[in-house]
Amino acid sequence: MNVSTVARRSSYTVNVFIGPRPVATPFGTIPIRSCLVRTCLLLGDTHAVGWFEQAKEAEEFRDWDTAIALVSAHAECYSANFYAHDHHLWHMDLLARAQRIEELTDLARVDVHARRRLNRLLREASVKDGRGEGTAAG
Image: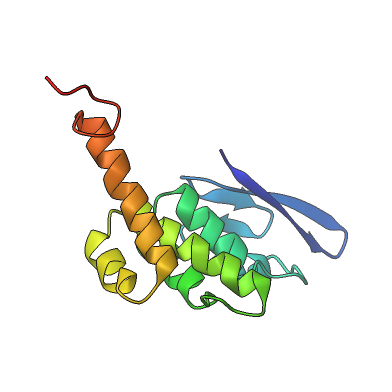
């Protein structure tokens, strides 16, 4: 699914579709894998795309390294700021989806959320392999 942003420059309104190919605009061709912030600034948009949108796009394209780096910078376990705590849970989910079991194992020693996500990942893997909870003993 493509993400669409709208950039304004004087009287122009340009739809920029984030996808696998370069985008042709009145201002030239933009390589899509370039930073979204630079793309919006190039088009003269006053509202540059922030880290959250970049992380969502990276997650959509399964660019786990980028998504994890962006989200982890804003994540904090048991933070008074519920957004930071939510980002921490998102960070744990990204680690699991990227199959970074070693990182989750290291974090699980001190972080209950990492431990729960690791347990869920391992349980899902064992059920998928037929060794898990729903199998009958033969």
